[in-house]
Length: 473
Image (cartoon, rainbow, N blue to C red; front, side):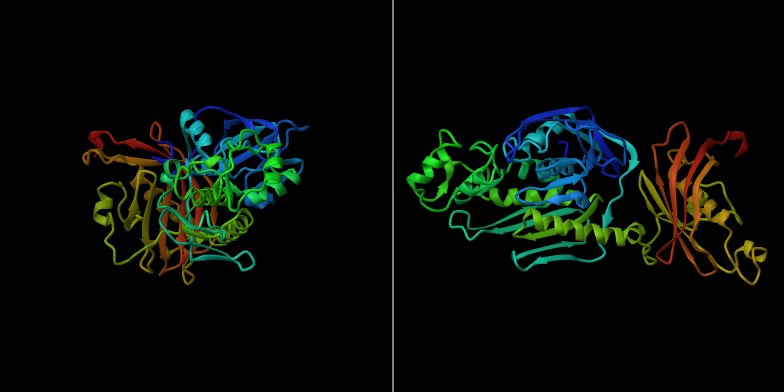
């Protein structure tokens, strides 16, 4: 299944173009969308191809301009509404970058759920991109409360994406409902097909205010809370054909729900779609009590503000001195060709296919301190970059055959910045991340050195991995 992302550490786009057509629930206009693959770091961008100049607007919480019964984004002349069901489908299925050409002001409602969008995404598939996808973590609970609407939402630190919702409309038909999503990979099967809903007593107001010109019995659940009068039935017949009014309380057309708690699950779907507008991939356990679009967006803004403020902290690897390293100095010597006084990595504490984290303890006894600013001991910047490169070598050098030996050679150093000095007593946390897959021995990496929870050095490095001839061992 598409939502089971096998490479979540990389960004993804669509494997090919997707075309979706339908009617906007509020505008009643037929709209066609062309979802096209987009470059890494593009994000989700809507382009109004029906307007002069074809203006674009990025799907971001900062661009939300209206939340009346749906979520609307806008920038200049570009305005697109009812984006939440499509955004939920894209987010849940790991699509990070896509350009959506749309010839109208509203995303089609289709059947009122995310299922048709999910089906289209699954059919076309997903294309992995070379750029890394950075997930951010919360430093503490983020709480949002709206006393007037009796809404409470909280995002808690969690190594995954989990949601719980509760709805209570004081409805005899609906009652109090709960819905949960233990992991985002469950979205397609458990949440996507859940349809939007409204109450029968709201229909007259909605039609009178031109809010659901495209609404019909096929794209929404209508909850009948009170007995319907003959006058109401006649008025509704002007908009709906072939309707079946329940004799008492229930659902219009005696609709069978797809889940017993389908309304609560749809509210959870809306939370997923609206929080996708944070624009920064994050992990959290979210609990939403009586959520709605306005409060979802306000909550998303609060989460984004927190993530931006704590972005650096979220990137810092955790160094637990009591935890045994993956590689100590002896093991590192078996991989790297460097020796005293040029071996600049003491430990490796994390290692995956895509990144590595090492440790360098800086002491007064470093030989370079004898000549580098005696009396004002500062570690040379070039040696910090060398430490990064050596750390990256642990990731890049093949380890299948211990008898094979390799050297690494710098080809290029770009965007190198030294942000604070390093002195005796400092501990360097060295992090190297692949920027692109290793090809033909060429290794492109982004390197960062953290000292005292701050960035000391960052650089983009390119090196070549060269196998040594056997007679040179």
